[in-house]
Amino acid sequence: MTLTREAAWQLLTEYNKEAFHLRHALTVEGIMRYFANELGYGDEADFWAQVGLLHDLDFENYPTEHCIKSQEIMREKGLEERLIRATASHGYGLAQNDIEPEHQMEKVLFAIDELSGLIGAAAIMRPSKSVMDLELKSVKKKFKDKKFAAGCSREVITLGAERLGWTVDELIEKTILAMRVDEEAINKACAELG
Image 1 (cartoon, rainbow, N blue to C red):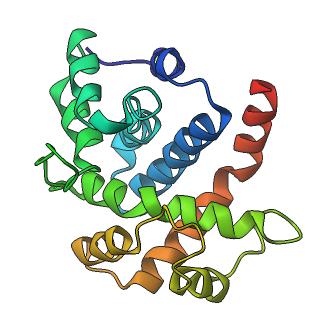
Image 2 (image 1 turned 90 degrees about the vertical axis):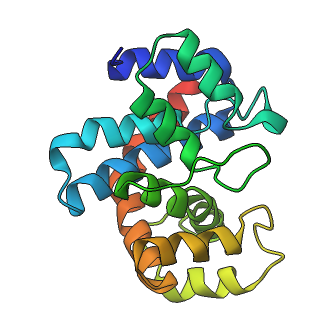
C-alpha cells in the first residue's frame, strides 16, 4: 500500500510525540526531497521524502529495536516493501540490522541522518539559530569536536559520504543547502505542534 503524505504523518505521530523527533523527521523529509530533485530522481521525490519522514518511526518508543520494530509496524499496516527496506537501511550496522544501503536514495538517507542532527545543533549555536547563514567551515569545526553533538556519529557520516562517492565536505555543503530550503516551513510546522 502507498501512503499519502497525510497518512504518513498520521502514522509517524501515532508512534512519535516528542517535538525533537517530529522536527527531525520533518527535516530529513525535506532533505530527502531536495536530494531526489538534485540527483535526477525528481519523479520519485515524494517517495524519497516519505522515506525521510518515516525513517525513525520506531525510535521514540523502541530505541533498542530501532529499524527492526519499524519493519514489523509497517508490515502490519500493509506498507510496501520498498518503503520498509529503504527506511530500515539507514540503520545498517546497528544490532540485528543487516539491510545495507544500496539504492542511491538509501545511501543518501544513511549519509544525512546523523549529519542533519550535527548541522541542526551547529545552527542552534549561532546568533541567528538558522542554517541560512551557516557555512561549511563552521560545521567542519563542530564535526572535528567529538564532544559537540556527541550522539551524531562521525563514523557513519564519513562512511555515508564514501558510499555516495563524495567527500565529507561535499556532503556537509550539500546537506546545508538542502536544509535551507525547508527551514522556514519546518519552523512553522514545529511551532504549530506546540
